[in-house]
Image 1 (cartoon, rainbow, N blue to C red):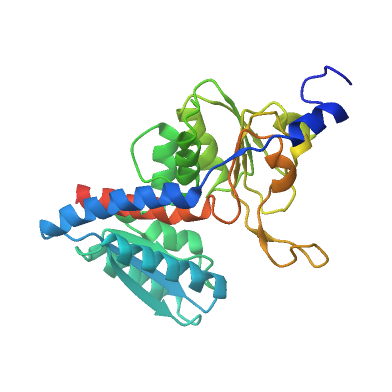
Image 2: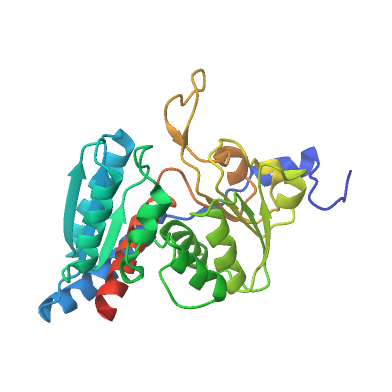
Amino acid sequence: MPGQPGIFTSKTRFELAKMTAQRIDGTAVAKSIRAQVAQRAAALTAKGNQPGLAVVLVGDDSASAVYVRNKIKACEEAGVCSVLEKYEASLSEADLLARVAALNADARIHGILVQMPLPKHIDAHKVIEAISPKKDVDGFSLMSAGELASGLDGFKACTPWGCMKLIESTGVPIKGKHAVVIGRSNTVGKPMALMLLQANATVTVCHSATTDLAAHVRQADIVVAAVGRRNTVTGEMLKPGAIVIDVGMNRHPEGHPNAGKLCGDVDFESANAVAGYITPVPGGVGPMTIAMLLSNTLDSAECG
């Protein structure tokens, strides 16, 4: 109805369509952070303590191989020593835990990342918990999660921390804003909500059992979509001027004009006409995850 908050008439929609959101360039923000990491790494290396990150890859998952390759390349560019350990999918859980223990004891290694997913016969939780809390640069352990929930300093999960940096890059204060996080995973949704709370936002967490998602999203000054389903958020669901962070990584289906190409959880075209700021996919959140991984590794090295 005309005048109802969050509901737009055809005329209003037409007027909004004349506008476009400011694009949040994750590649540029990540480049700036990685440049800072490189300076910190050079300073430590000059003192004889080059930062070191160990990446463990088990199996032949193609997507994991790409992620690992990008992480290793980023390490090399930032002056961080990278150690890549690749194993067949048949590697036993006991042998993987033994390798983690050896890396825990290696003074040259300041961060340990075991690439997920792992083969089904390996308990991922057990492997994550085997990593020394001092080297948990992914921020996935119970110790890291507990420190975040308690407001203590510790390693932050890389993707939501990267999202926070993207929000901060807009220059819009988070304090007092209403943020809606769509998704409740341990790796993104939950830590994202906690980080926003710590920044003094009022936070609503939505998920698959949420009734009337659109009603919640329409109230949000900040929207973080992290469910892994395309078109979860559309322009008609957004509050004009909202900051929209798209964590999703999907592909357009057959029959779509951009079939096979990457897309997020947000319908970019319609959201772009309503939002104040928006991240693209690709080129938004993705580059930030690696940047924050490197930053965590430097934090570990500097404390060591």
